[in-house]
Image 1 (cartoon, rainbow, N blue to C red):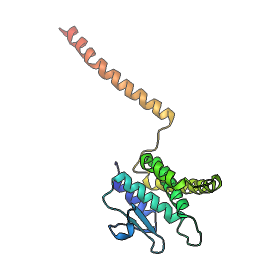
Image 2 (image 1 turned 90 degrees about the horizontal axis):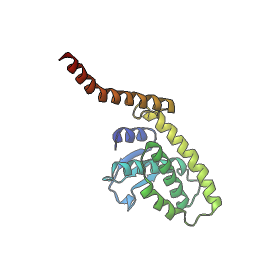
Image 3 (image 1 turned 135 degrees about the horizontal axis):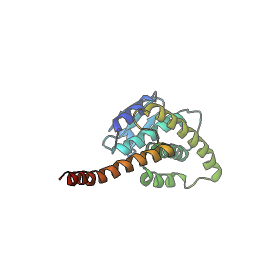
Image 4 (image 1 turned 180 degrees about the horizontal axis):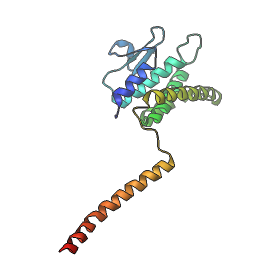
Amino acid sequence: MPNYEKIYDKLVQATDFEVKFSRELELGSAKGVTQPRRKTILLRPGMSQQQTIKTLIHELAHSVLHADPSKKLERSTQELEAESTAFIVCEHLGIDTSEYTFPYLANWSKDKELSQLSKSLTRIQLTAEKFNQVVDQNLEKIHEKPLTLDQKIEHAKRVASAQNLAKKGPGLEREGQEQTR
C-alpha cells in the first residue's frame, strides 16, 4: 500500500488514544479493540497494511463515537457505526474494503429498524466528514489533490502532444537524413 507508514503515523497522531499492536488475550478474535477508560487502541499484528489501516480507522471511530460511557448504545449499533465510518474514510483514501465491510455490516445491521439506522447514518456521516477533513489536512503532502477537469484536459493534451512528437520524431529524422544524402 503506497504511503502506508505515513498514513498510519498521521492517523495515530490525530488521536489522544495510545495505539499499539498486541497479541494479548484481550483481543480475542477481534482485529482491534478500543479501551476508552485506558485511552488505548489495540491492533492485531500481522494484518495486511490495508486491513491495519481499516481496523485503525474503525477503532478510532469507536474512540470518537462510543467513548462516553453515559451514552449507552447496543454493541450492534456501535459496530455498525464504526465500520461504516471506516468504510467511508477508507474509500476517501482510495482503499477498497467492501469485500470485508459489506458482510460485516450485514451481520451487525440485520436486526435494525429503519429509524435506528437513520440515527446511526447521521452520526456516521458527521464522523466520517470529520475524519476525512483530518485526513486531508494531515496527508496533504502525501497525496496529490484530484485534478480539475480543465487540469485533466491540459494534462491529456500534453501527453498526446509528447506522444505525437515521439512518433513523428524518428520519421522526421529519417527524412532529414535522406535529404542530406
